[in-house]
Amino acid sequence: MKTLQEIVDRAKRIVFFGGAGVSTTSGIPDFRSADGLFSRTYAGLTPEMMLSASFFYLHPDRFFEFYRAYMLHPEAQPNAAHRKLFELERAGKLSGLVTQNIDGLHRKAGNRLVYELHGSVHENVCMDCAKTYDLAWLLATQGVPHCPRCGGIVKPSVVLYGEGLDPYVSTGACREISRCDALIVAGTSLTVEPAASFLTYFRGGSRELVVINREETPADSRATLVIRGDVAQVMGELRV
Image 1 (cartoon, rainbow, N blue to C red):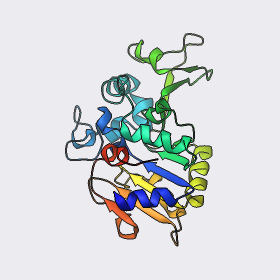
Image 2: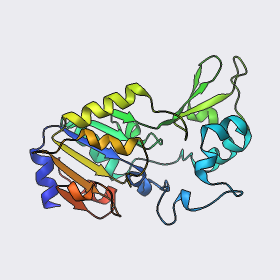
Image 3: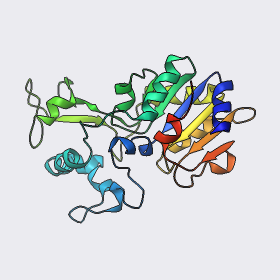
Image 4: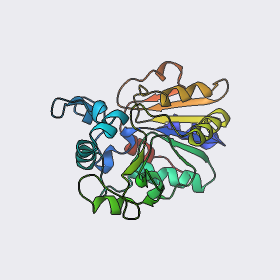
């Protein structure tokens, strides 16, 4: 923690790159740990199958049944990690926050410099007329949600397997990673592409890379500092 504090204190442009492990303390299960969401099958199908674009188009009823049951956590609140990142942004230390999460907790905590690589459950878009609906609206529907205005299917604004990332979001995230003098990678296995490849934009040199994760990651070997632990606990102990 002493070394992490020193890195944060001297950094002028910090970028935080986070994954599911950032939100587990908020009660949202992660995906790839031993007891994570992806460790099970559902009616003989893997979560990757059920969260794919092809499954959505072929079986929208089963997609939304799974999506509502396992991907939505409207009661979740920001934890110590989310709150500390808001403090860092407010203090002018955090120049960008890149997240693989779709829970919207970073924005709920107050952060504005957020790049949500995989979208957000808080926005849903009609596939026909492009009218948007919030999470509360979706939660009030049953079965396949249809737009009250035109009758089209309303799709969550999340990136499904087989879909590409939003180019604007991707470009902004890569730009911030390339410009930062300290990159904190936390709560992610760095196995999901193309998000994991974004770290190639961090050139190293005199800049510092910190990894905070319970398990090993592909970035550990080139990190300035590796901390094995809970992201919320570690980030919560930082002073801003």
